[in-house]
Each structure stands twice: as structure tokens, then as C-alpha cells.
Amino acid sequence: MKDLDKYEDSRLIELLKEKNPVNNKAFNVIYNRYSDKLHAFCLFKSPSRDDAAELFQETWIKFYNYASNGNRTTGEISLPAYLYQIARNLSIDKYRVRKNKSIQNLDELDLEKLIDPLNIHENYEKEQLLSLISLAVNNLSDIYKEAFVLRWFADLQFNEIAVITGETAECIKMRCYRAMSEVIKSLNPIIKEISK
Amino acid sequence: MNNIEQIMDFLDGNWDPETEQSFAARFSGEPELRSEFRNYIMISGEVSKNIKSFGPPQHATESVFDTLGFSLMSESESATQMPKAGFFRSKLFSSLMTGVVSAIVTYLIMLNYNSGKIELNHANYVNQNNVQNSANIPKVSSSATDLKNQKENTPAERPIMKRSRTENVKVIILHDTVYSDKVQSLGIQAPVSAEIAFSNTPAFHVLNMGGRSEPSNMQPILLSNDKNLGITFEFNNSTNWNFPVETITPKSLSKFNNMNLAILYDLDKYFRTGIQIDQETFYLIYQGTESDDITYQYRQQPNFTTYSILFRYYPVEFYQIKPFAGAGFGINSGGYVSRFSAGFEYMPYDNFSFLLSGEYANLWFNHQGSSFAASKASLRYGLSYHF
Image (tube, rainbow over all chains, first blue to last red; front, side):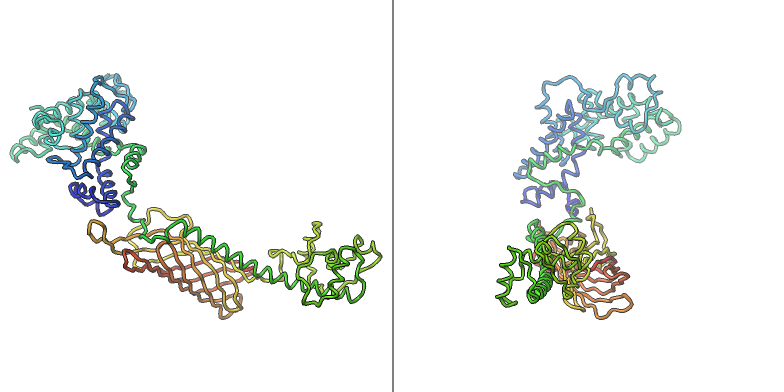
């Protein structure tokens, strides 16, 4: 398995068609490579942690079933982008009717405190920054949240995000700019406090 | 184009060198740009650095692998995987070996125990003869018949084990004290025989003070100090050097790694044989071809439990020191092991020894039909107790 770590994604996908233990090892490598980022994406796409775990599982199972049957999987996009595309489509099917935002899947932080400049004097610890970023991202509208998560959490390029979302790369680029600007604007007082 | 947009384009490397230079030149004069640049780096860096904190919960991972019928492997698992060895790595093999070792130990103990019983019964027989010859046979109803029968038999025909009240009489004699409960009630005093005085040991006395009326041949083994069982228990720890020097370390080690336990039996004054169980590692290097037709070189240091048969030769003994040389052959879940050792025992007490020895061990194993070997040298130090 150590040696398979060096394989590119396309080679690993080919090995998924092989019998055990080769496909088992290949799947382990792919899983270790992308599970953290995919789960982060699922967290932002789901109303709760349990729902996120369910979406995460279904994404992997669907991915493997496609890949092991020899179906063309990634096409013009990368393997991680393909995984996010599966997760996104599944989440659309599952939560089509859900429009309201939910922050219960993230750490229990008070949004009022976050946007109230008076509370910056509460001296947030630096380790809380990630939770605050998550909270700020989750507070974005869906299209900007998705763009932010795929760009900075999933580390995808604009054109890959464009394929996943069915938008143009320029449109995604603009969404990412705005999303990041909003997040920085929300966290600016806290970041200043941390920087001191 | 706002500042954030420019920062992202700059960091993505989308600009030509001239545009980058002009952007960099703005840093010194625009505090707001510097501040937004720092914020951008802090946020994107924080997300990128801590992405693992968004990792899936364990139950989700297990559920994925269970559903797909896969086994979850850690990234370093191959460092502790053992080569395929079929039956030898099975739990059945381990259980069988435990059973075999237990059976051999039990056999050795019982062998010695039985030989001790024969000698003691012979002593009883001598005593009975004396009693009979003196014509002072106690007239106890249950034993009188037995003694009568014994009189008619030749000594060789008599059963070795004989539980009778006559034997109770002998027990009384062993303490050089004439008890009255079984003998004097008949008005007869049994003679004290000097021939069985050797059995009058303190341990035996203690045993009978408990009120047990066991025959004299039930002398317990571990309380005996007049009979050497010829069995030695050994416990060793060791420091090891692999050949070649290992470049990986096991993911986990057994709690009893580098320790061994041995049970040896004295064949005679110079030779001992026995069984040894080692918890150890060997550094394995071997090649194999996977299903993807790629040949891999594996480097592993698995944990093994090795069961060995040992032979030791003790040529001399001087000043409480017994040098020895030994050889052994063993098996474990990886393959076959040969061992050669030399060292000495220091015996400050009669039964208790300190051991120091050097050992060279070789493991032969197969992978995909090819044979490989691993070797190591050990410095062993331990304790032994001789029963």
C-alpha cells in the first residue's frame, strides 16, 4: 500500500476494477487521499453531522460502484472533483426542499457574538479561528458557500468547480472573490484581535 | 477589481511579471492592501492547515468499508504485515502448539512423579516384609486378608499401589512414634523399622499433621527436597542486532517482545533438552509480485511467537559456573527458525541460577514460492530455577 501511495488517481481508478486485495488497497489509498476534504464538503452541504456522514458514505459507495464497473468516471475533471460532483448531486436530491440555513452541524458558536464588534474583547483563542471561519462560511448564501468550500476546503481550481456546478469559470471566480471578501469582512475584527 | 480579487490572482500566478511587480510595489503605500493580504493568507492557511479536523468520524469510515466489503488499512500497515504462511499463521496452529507444549510438560512432570512413586512403594514393601517376618501383624480385619494374600504372593507379584490400613501403621512408624489408635487397641506394638527411616522427612511430617491418612507414596513433588526432578524453568530477556540493520520499525510490538520462557529436562549430567517459547521480531527483506504485475521489495519487522526445541550441553562445572552450548530448531507463523547459543549459568544457590548467553538465530521463510532468510544476534540474560 505504501507503493500505491505514489500512484496517480487515474491509475488507482483502474486498479479498482481488479480483484481483492488490489482493489482494496487502491480504494484505501483514494480514501485516505480525499476523505477529509470530501467530509468537509458534506458537512457544509448537510443540515447535521449525521446527515453529513450519511451523504459521505453514499458518495463513496456510488463512486466505487461506478469505478469498479469500468464506467468512465472522472472524464474531464479530476477524481476529487468527481467525488464532490457525486456528493453535490446526492445532496441536491436529498435536501431539495430544504432552503433554510442551518448551523447546527458546526461548532456551537453564537453568531450574534461573531458579528457584534463589542464581543471581540472576549479574547478569542487562535484555535477558535477555524470554527469561526466555518461559521462565517456557513452563513454565506448557498452559491457562495459552495464556491468557498470547493475552492479553499477542497482545494479545486475554478474550472473544476465550474464543471461540478455547471457554471462558467468566470462566474465561479467571481463567487469565490465575493465569498472570501464576505468572510474576511465578518472575521476582520476577530483577526485583528488575534493578531495583537 | 477589488483588493481580494487582485490578491487571489496574484497568488494564483495569473499575472505577467510586470503586473506582479506593480502589485508588489503597492504594498508599501497601501496599509489596507497589506491588511487584507494578511487576512487572506490567515484564513486560507488556517483552512488548508486544519483540513484534517473536518475528517470523517470513525463510524462513517467503517460503514463505507463494511458496505463495500473492504478492510481498512492504515498507511503504515505494510510495515507490520507478515508474509503469507498459511497454516502457520493461523490461530489453530497457535492453539495446537500450546496444547503440545502443555502435553510435553505434563508428561515430563508425570514421568518423574511416577518414578518417585515406584521407589516409595518399594520402601513400603520392604517394611511390610519386616512386619510379616516378625509375625507381629496387627489383627485388623480389613487389612488382615490383604496381608494374608501378600504372604502367599512373591514380592514381584504384589501390586505397587495398595491402600490398606496396614499402610496407616507404617505412617505411624515413619514418625518414630508409636500411635495407639490402631495398634495398641489390639494390644500389639508394631516394631520400628530402621529401613524406612529415609522417608521421615519434615515435609512428610507436615503433610500428615493435617490429618490426612494418605499412603506414603503420595509425597508431593514440590515439597520434596530429597529428589531432584531434573526440570529447569528459564526466563530470559534479550538485546538484539538484526542483519542487515533494520531501516523500519514495527508499528507495534508485543508486550513481551524479546522475552522467552523455556522448560528444560536433564537427560543426564551433561545434556538437557526442552522447549522454548520466544516473543521476538526478525527483520525481513523479500521480493514479491502483486496482481498488478509489479515486483515489490518488502521490508517488514513482524512480531513472531516462536516455539523451539532445544538441546544444551554442559561440559563442566566449576566455582558455581556452568558453561553451556546449545542448539535449537523452531517454527513460527513466518517460517522455520534455527538457533545456536553459548553462555554460562552462575549458580549462587542450589537451584537458582543467573544466565548470560549469546545467540545467533536464523529465520527461513517463503513468499510466492521463493525462499528468504533473516538473521539476528542476541545477548540474552535471565534467571532459571532447577526443580
